[in-house]
Length: 403
Ligand code: HSE
Picture 1 (cartoon, rainbow, N blue to C red):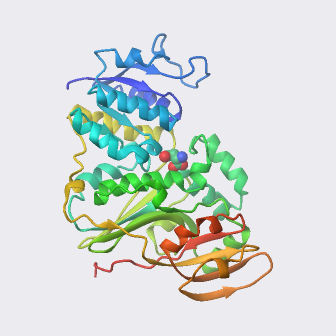
Picture 2: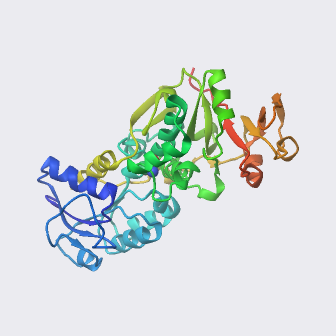
Picture 3: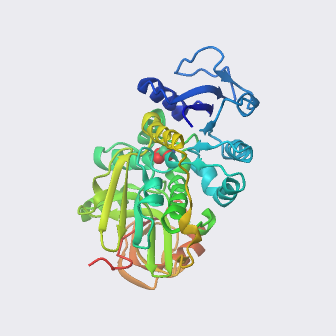
């Protein structure tokens, strides 16, 4: 392919960012030929030449000159319909739609194989950080032990503003929305689902395993209260929303998304605002850390541009790890040490701790620090869903293979 002619679906924050990045870089190898939007009349910050916008998908699918589709639509069903149609017609796609990809990845892999075409989606996980292609290509061996980090810019922005700047939670959320970091439904950000979708995609490229969203324990930051912030400050730690996938034995791995009490010595302690940070841990090399902007139009667009240019060289994911015979299996049979703060919900009798280290009682904000199985947290999701309950992981290492 000597020139990429792009049909772009979606012209929101990231779509406009891609348009701007291509315009700024005066890229001679890639050009946006058509942009399909749902509502032509919607006011947009970016002006485009007459005739570039259309509301008819067929203007893109039916144009024989268009040889790449960039899909940045903010609706998982519409996005799946566009991507599966393109792949079925043999047209390669670059997408940033993490919710859609996390839900349909096995099917999307099958479509790529069946129609001998490619779907690239580095922008779906951690904005500008090239985490997917690195996991796919560089970490293509069995040394990988853990991928862990801050994968959602909006919730990290909120926590930073609340924790370090004393702003109110609601003000910080509003600002994250104004700055274009948050999803159109910000509950995806603050309830941990956006981080979960990214973790599911990362796990496919890290360990060759696809785990459906409903099987993974996910707890966000919406129940955070002043008592938790006070507790963290007293202990000299920060509260961060952390997603992680980790091997717990040679043949087993676990994964979950939940707030974590992060000590100063950890790399992710200093990851603030809308930045993301990913720690990759493995045998022989200990830890590596990737840091960068995880949300926002231009940072995410830079990752889309990288995938567009990768197509110039015919790059595609091979999903090699999915074919390994010794892939580890997913388990929730692991013990975690957690901080659970509660008021009226009777946590001590409803949650089965295997051990407790601290029991603290004070009006309106009791807490327990203790050991609990991940499977128990999943089974008691309804209990933990009560508004007066907040839970945070207190990390311990899983497999100490790196000396
Ligand atoms: N809402 C997402 C975030 C955007 O805040 O990280 C980038 O995926």
